[in-house]
Image 1: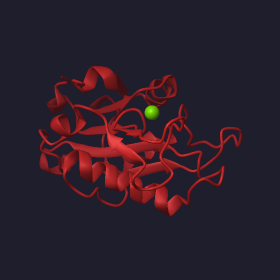
Image 2: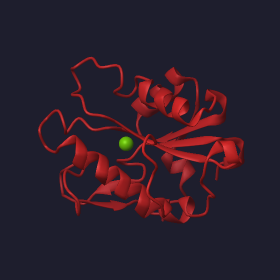
Image 3: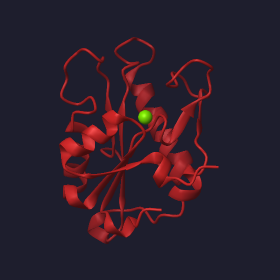
Image 4: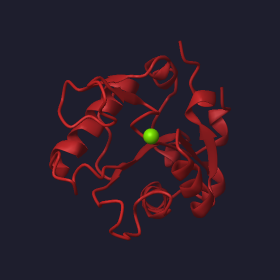
Length: 165
Ligand SMILES: [Mg+2]
């Protein structure tokens, strides 16, 4: 387990890190009821006293590529609500506005937010007013690790952060 006291902000990827899709052959959920938390996630996240770094607590953020929006699989508003639902299921509270970042663009649009681009992480660090060296990003893909490197924050694989089964 990570020494979370070292961090003012811990940002999580969603799919494959906090949750998995329950529809066979589908990677990301496109509707409520198509996902479940991964093992160990709720047990770990409910054990952390989340809050604002200005009050000596660790803040929580989400940074999720949601290319399904560009592909027409789901609306941005629904994707955002499902990410908020995921946080609530995992950590026990509704995330504050500004702490959930998603990239709605397709893989070939060349946007500046889709991971491994660092913009979503940078926005979250600006929102919580945290420094990169006090920020950890937890994810399951090389693009997550790339985003952390590009943003200058630390990175941990989700398999190492969460205990699993
Ligand atoms: Mg992922």
